[in-house]
Length: 212
Length: 378
Image (cartoon, rainbow over all chains, first blue to last red; front, side, top):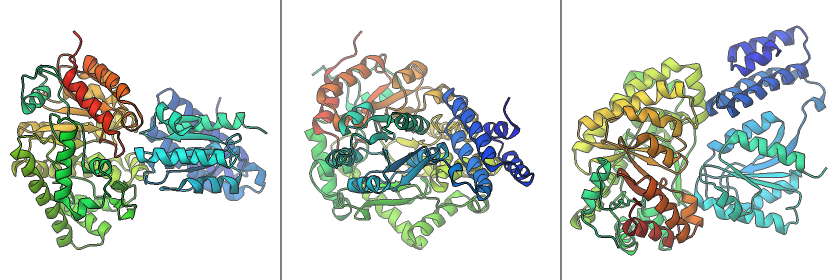
């Protein structure tokens, strides 16, 4: 049996979620408990998406509902540990490509899943990915593309990763409408997807596999 | 080479009408951007010397062994800076990107929620012009001059191909209301609009669709090929559940296609992203009067099963295969397309979406040669 808040989140009832969060905060509910219930709702959204009951638009809507609710809750969180980070990822659209729809959706979903995301934007040079990785100690690089000229900078990024001696501890995922298994192999990435939600699941697996 | 018993034009027209052809027609979506990269010339040359670029397009067409129809005649476009497409912020060679980069649209929220009321008050055409002015920071007369310059270049480019009796496949592009609003509002805000203010969005689309139909028909009546693109990149089940497609995309597609067909025009539905779940709806469109152009993310073999004997299919050699693959891989894939999708006609072999700027020449050649030399297995 799920809570009323979890059910409202899962059913994408935007107004109801906001109202419930406000009511529960007024009655001194635990902010971390509220976030947990919202995440349980998002898990159900994810399941429905995997089962083809929900579509990308419903993932977008669920993200917005969650962000609004989280904005109400977060000022009440005093314990910094409550904002748990499950992993760090550096993400961007490689140089020569300025498309970012897929990347932005992925970033939103990654953040909701608990990743700390360093979004470098679009038209990002390969060395910028490596610099950010070293600065943040992130363990995943995400490269998103919609056009084929992005393949070379993707490959160069992986080459730089090797040269910096970081390849062993860093996973590389590529995504976007133009990517295929052939592209993954060409650039030397660990995974490829055209589905933002699947990309998040792959990143969660990466975290599980990474050396502690 | 197989025995050719039809002219290029006959082959394309018969395929569009779902009739048998002597071989599968081939018409890759090659534009000047590929040609300039292939020739090692910066993309900025398109603006500096459009006539030279048109000549290079023709040279590349002959080097590839020629094919059945050329997608566009040169640098000019009839729909540039027109209300037939969504006014968007763009970046290209020499304009925020390196000289060898291709022109790209920027995903920016150039239209606000309040602007929906402007469309309802002023109509789409008037508002679109205002939006172009807003994005480009220029007065209306300059925007109109940009449109006229691009269109007159298109007519000038067309002459070369007409003199040689080489068909141009596409006259211009018109976007669906959903495509336009999704691009102008940008994807996330527009998607939220569909849930938060659906009636307002539908009312705006009702206004837009009539302007788009009238504008496209007026343009077609002023000349050029009868085939043109109806661009639909944002309305598929990749993004939206079918209940949203049924309200915000398909009724407008149907209205547009039926109006164009009644005018004797042939819309080519440009279907980027995965439309597999949406394809059964397209059986409601007039039979043998339009085409579906697939980009390799829709399952083209499933599309054939669903749409065979109803709508011509065009596609879909994947961009990644053209850029990274080998001629043998391309040939194998094209043979599979010809065998399964080309069976019983109604198929035009093409690139999945536009030919990538960095496609290997030998891969394009393999695609064209396979269409010319390989007959479907019986």
